[in-house]
Length: 436
Image 1: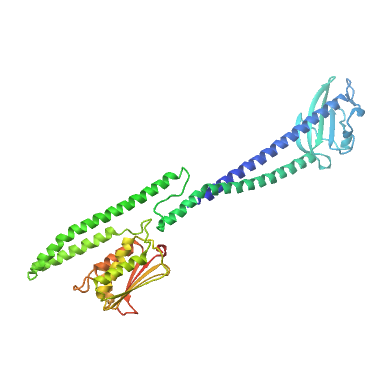
Image 2 (image 1 turned 30 degrees about the vertical axis):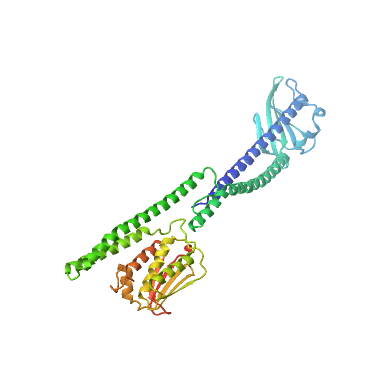
């Protein structure tokens, strides 16, 4: 997606460049027009002066009083010229033309005419009838110096415009960045929200973005409320179903000699397993924005203390916790995941269980026991179908299947193998680096 800052900067830069280019072209055209208007005005004045010095008699050649002609028309190739033509008479030329004769032009103004010494001329031509004689008078002026001056001015204007454009682009970039600064703060808050450091967005933002921030905060609140209601409902449902199931087990176990009762017990156990599995899945929050586990080490030590009481100190549980602060995950999910794994390890262990949490390209949770371990086929069956390999113990079955679902919700990975330290089962849980 295109950067908003880049898009605004590029759009405004193109607009400013177009404005300055249009301004430069317009100024150049206007300068040329003003220059030509000034030259034409002088040519008209020169033409009136020449006409005033002209004497025309009937059926006689025109006579010019040269002492009334401006000096500039007397210097050779001075850049100011005139030429007078009369029917069947030789043309009268200013001495500045020397021996060069101008072409015949129609009434009006002729631009960019190449004159003596490759001078660029503007020629004004008028026709007159004096004392019955038809006279055509052309007055010319060299505009080479004016064109050079105009070009120099346009170059200076272009350089000044480029400097002004650069300054405006810098100011524009500063204004855009200053205007988008609240969005940068909002982005940082979103990252903090994802990491679980804050619970809602509080960054002051412009009025146009405020409704978006309010909607995000509302959605966060709704998600948390729905998750909590779901967990409460699942907990109530769990208690409501377990009581009648327990009663059913007690009644059916008294009649275990009956083959049909054994089948009923098996089906009831399947129902219980499915209920536990679906309740666990419903309680899993997954990677919800804003979830965090602030004190994992303390919570795990409390959990281990409870498990030691349950197993009456028969199992030595050792926790190795290094270089991990808070974890970006739901506390209940992580406690259920690790609790299931430790509980399974304790049920199968002979004397010792080791729990290791460390950070290495992500969050690693390793749980090892000194029990009998599992074959590759047994590992595949346990993870794939959630069955137990020993019906006498509630372990390595549904608990691991629930663990797999929680790990999947956090885009993690579950691996089973043999412990090099203790010789029993080793469970490796690997979560992405975004969680630590």
